[in-house]
Amino acid sequence: MAKNTTSGDHTPNGAVLWLWQAHNKVNARLHGDKTEDPAFPKIQFPSKNLCRDCHIGVGEPDKNSIFHFLLSFYGRSGIIVEPRNETGTSRELGTVEVSENKDLDWWELHQRKKDLDKIRDLRKKKRSKDEARKEKKFGALVVAKQPEGDTFDKEVQLEALSSVSQRYHWDFLGFSNVDMSLCVVFYVLCTLGILALYYHFIVRRKYRPCKISTHNKFW
Image 1 (cartoon, rainbow, N blue to C red):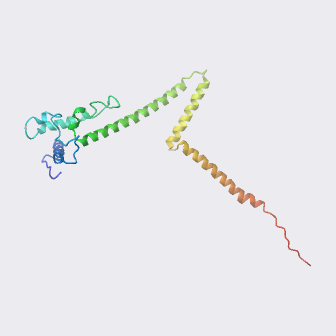
Image 2 (cartoon, helix red, strand yellow):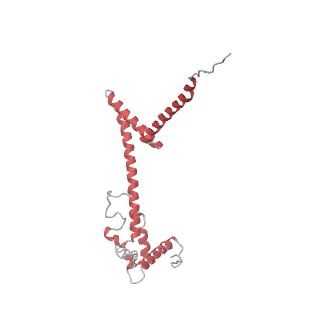
């Protein structure tokens, strides 16, 4: 593809147009092929619905208009900063409406969907960490502001916070409650085994049975 699509312009602007030309050549070659998805046909990008200024005349599209369209379409304005809700909105794909999704290439839609899923996962993880941090700070403030008369409640909250901190400590080291239980059981078994060996080799050696000699000597 690189050999068939050549460009004498080696500037960044020329590289953008070169990639656009290569993309459209591949779409033209695969258009009508048996591997083409009927729901997302291989069309020349951008279509008239996406960029009407790019198809003013008949014949070759206006490269200057296409270049500015590509900059705006894949530029900072197309980056999702904060979605309106978790389920998605009609403009979740940047500057493209849902009714115009069929004008996009299937691979572009697939990549954008993957990017959106990653963004949602990262935001959920960040939100959960922030909530856990806020709950921990809130618990510390509640314990600190507890009245002196409610000593029982204060002790209960301190015990709860200590248990939570211990659990986070073991989780941080990579051990769960099951792992700690197995370690305790293994420790007990090893201790019993050592005691059994000690009894077998040390204690029983001290109490050897006396042998009575049955040999009689005659003078």
